Image 1 (cartoon, rainbow, N blue to C red):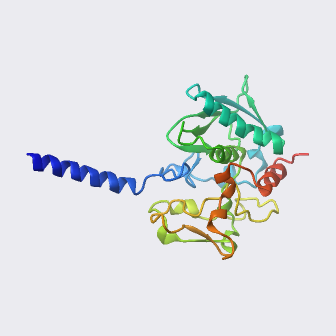
Image 2: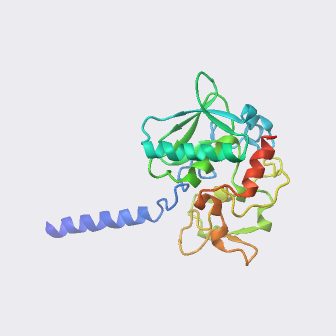
Image 3: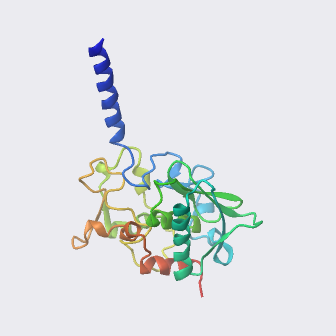
Length: 252
């Protein structure tokens, strides 16, 4: 009987280890097939170019004003961090996150399983999930807020192969779509250079099966892996992030 119990415990432990090997090592690694590019929630479940392409200006929030509601579940420190991220937009751009009064279109910031957001202004109540504790990093919050403003991941630019190489064999099975490039008709580069350090760029090891090897690597060997997504890791906008927001929203 003791041996049977021991065997059961051992098997349970092995199952846990097997599951853990695919568990998230980064807040933005959501292994959810309903999420586009790992952390973008699409209402119809698929990327509809007519609705979501960043070449469309209707993704923008009018006058850069984003009404929001904040879940009561958040702690005082969580709220302080979220509002600190909002302040970064106000400091560098014309974007203003304002508490909702009676607006029909607004962002509901709440704590669900993981960090994800709907992209751009899609109408009505739209989701921005920041799971308490898990997503409470300034860079992660800024990243999800950027999705809510209408921005895609930097490494999905159609010219990305000139700047980074994707190591497809090391991507967790099923997560390959998170690394697919967009077509020119689907993403507006805004005449800006590729930004390795962007708040919207994946880190080098995102969705890696073998955590000792990258899934993304700069084609320029002089650029260190740690530069990929540096802004997100440091919790700061890059100069190109700021230019991107100001150009897309036509900030004065």
